[in-house]
Amino acid sequence: MKQVTDNTLFNHIPLMRPWLEIAEWEALKEVILSGWVSQGPKVQEFEQVVANFVGAKYGIATNSCTSAIHLALHTQGIQPGDEVILSDFTCMADANAILMAGAIPVFADIDIHTFNLDPNHVELCFTEKTKGILIIDQIGMPANLDEITELARKHDCILVDDAATSLGATYKGKYLGGHGIPTTYSFHPRKMITTGEGGMLVTDNPEINNKARILRSAGASVSDLERHKAKGTILQKYATNGFNYRLTDIQAAIGLIQMNRLPEMIRIRNEQAMYYSNAIQEIDELEPPFIPSYAKSCFSSYLIKIRKGISITPSDVIHHMADKSISCRYGIMPIHREPYFTVRSLKDEDYPASCDVASRSFFIPIFPGLLQEEMDKIVKTLKSVFVKKPGR
Ligand SMILES: *Cc1c(COP(=O)(O)O)cnc(C)c1O
Image 1 (tube, helix red, strand yellow):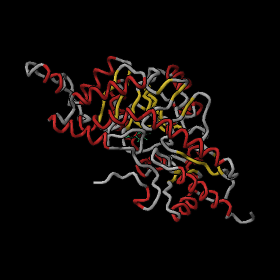
Image 2 (cartoon, protein in one colour):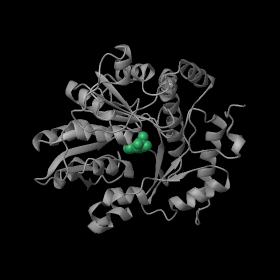
Image 3 (cartoon, helix red, strand yellow):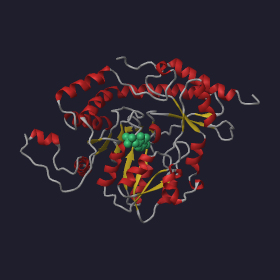
């Protein structure tokens, strides 16, 4: 069997491809032959490695980031009927996690430059039912944590930071999860590291840690690993009902190898982003991503905005790029527009920044296996879209 390392295999440049090598395959062999394939010692090790990396006390691995967010809300007391504020510029998974807790997602508009919550708009969303804010560090870029933490304090709300895409990004010099806010990560292949599917909640709070571990595994007071170590002499008790949100040792073994590679992934993505941002400055019609002084992005994706008043649309760009065998994608769709929320009759006018960014942004490929000549081709093709414009 041959490893896919060559983008020309599919005859096009993909938007993203995970960095997986023989080392991951070898790690799988070890786990499979050990006989322990469900949540066990590898999950425990993976939790410690990720928590240490980001600077949090505890890591609780889960089968997805969605379930990690649900645990973070549930363990902090979010109840049915509570309102939780989140960004309008995000995927359904964030709203789903809030709905899973029985709570009501309330959408706030974003800052047009950072694509993250606009604290001024968040302020307008509070009601007497507001109990939490789900911060999202969108597309690898940390949100303005201090301003949102201040709002949460003022309104007596709990916080969860969804850093699904942002493992390796820093806010004021520290990784997300290292700021005392319960923080979640995703290990889906579109994110920084992958375990196929998977997620993790990191926290410094021992109570959240204990509760989340129990809820993750059916509500059992004792994990399989603890019971095994005790040689069957302890019996688990169920003081609460729970979920099956367990990650497997098969996945954690892959995750451990991926974590070794994370610093290199962050370095390469930042170099690629720098190359793009320099090149895009030569195209008047395009705006490269904005980086606020408090943050360092990990560039899990690279989102470009077409400047206001330009007649070329993201659709035009995406089609032109596809003709040249380059995969691009539309930016994130404002979540208030999803058919599921139609009953609320939410208006685009209430989310001007989110709608504006969605209408004129698109993703271009960025990932560690992307070659320099492929990036050259991407930039050249982008330039040709805008040079074709009439009157130039
Ligand atoms: C991908 C993503 C999620 C969902 O992660 P899963 O692991 O697929 O559940 C949640 N929030 C954001 C911002 C994401 O990008």
